[in-house]
Length: 368
Image (tube, rainbow, N blue to C red; front, side, top):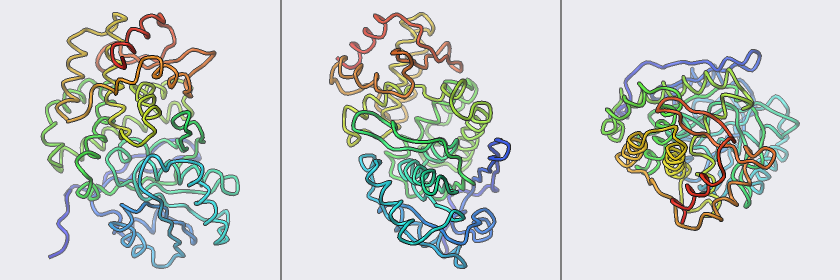
């Protein structure tokens, strides 16, 4: 018997409308094995397939088999956020140079957010920019990090402090890959799905609440809707604000607090989505302390994330350490930490206009 498809819905297509940099997002079952789809959207003769030691054994052969008429060089990176650094960007660049890839090559990022961010950043640097393709295999990457052109790596002093905006040529999200995703990774991806409901769409948030069990059980129709709606919301905000000068900053709900968790723990203990989940609870709490959000709404956010199985409190490494990490953040301007806060469930604001003592009290309550 052949592989039973996890998802039995037609290929869904969205477009990130960025004039001459517009590109499609394809969502469907079995796309990594579909030679017609891959050949249509991956156009270069010379391809560098960047993946990691966990994902490549599962899916790299499918991609290579679908692109038999190309030169495909493969590079495997170690798996983990701690490897998302300049050292491994250099490995990608070394392989591109050693194989004499020209400016007409394409870099294929097969994996989760770490692979996509790192490979995309290397592509942005090589010969001042070559094309790359996102082939996301985790829920978090499919609903968030593969869309929008943010690429980069971490520094010991801060999350994603080194990077560039470099839009992919296409995003091809094969939903069948979620069947091999560890439950912890699935839950981390759902944190980003919840984020879209909290900042943009209260009806979507309510839908997530009603469908938590189905999502955790990999129900085909539930996951199809979650992925499509998340990509739809992100594509719309990227179209309006490609370089995060306005509305796109709202997508960072929970991220400044979450990045502090990741930085302080050395990128080894918390998955990105887990840190974002705890960060969203902290952001909701601070919003309530400022009188923007009802206490009942904070409980609703916490309860939803707990139902998914996500952490809702950070490690108690101290308020000062958290503040120090937050100060090393791309969103700091004129010395002020700018935060995404909730005005209500389904609406957010990006602001540095808050009393310092409220931030201090929030950090003390959650970080100790």
